[in-house]
Image (cartoon, rainbow over all chains, first blue to last red; front, side, top):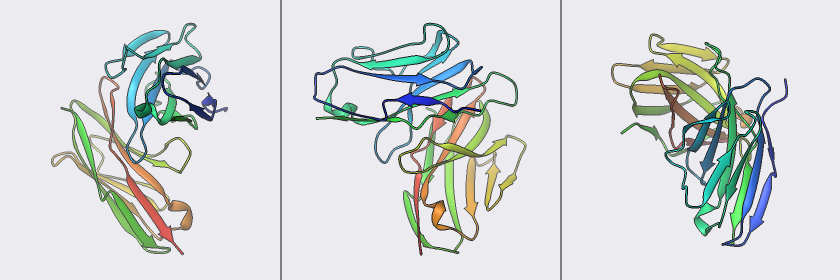
Length: 115
Length: 111
């Protein structure tokens, strides 16, 4: 089974620029998550989708971050404009809603460096 | 506030030795607890899943314990290998499918 795909793997931008990340979850997984992981810390949930609806976006800095999952499959996360403190790894994960299969599967992440 | 703490922050051991990582949590309503291994530059991968009624679960050289009364969990690694060098993250999941991540323990196994 193919895993969670993310692109790009790395991105370097200057502050105040915009950037977008893409995630394709495991086929059939209804739930998709975006996490921000700062070096040396555990992942922090930014937004959780179930199909194409938002379940939790309480920790998403909505003044600069946005995410969508229009067709309930792949998703994009955008930062506009970026700040220095946005430098982190952005992880996408997906999970099945089926009982007993709630394990999250993570993609490799996109490493963002804001200069 | 839902919170997961882990100790130690980092650990260095020699190949072949055993080690134990700790996790304390204040999360409710508790559904299950998971330990993830995260290699450098990769996403986390699930090692074990433990529900409220389970005290111990093993996965090869990894053994996780859970004390739901004291809200503590541990991950014991036996006969460590160089490939065990990674971050180990404790995650507690609520019934609402909220995933609360700990900060991780960075393990380095030296030859």
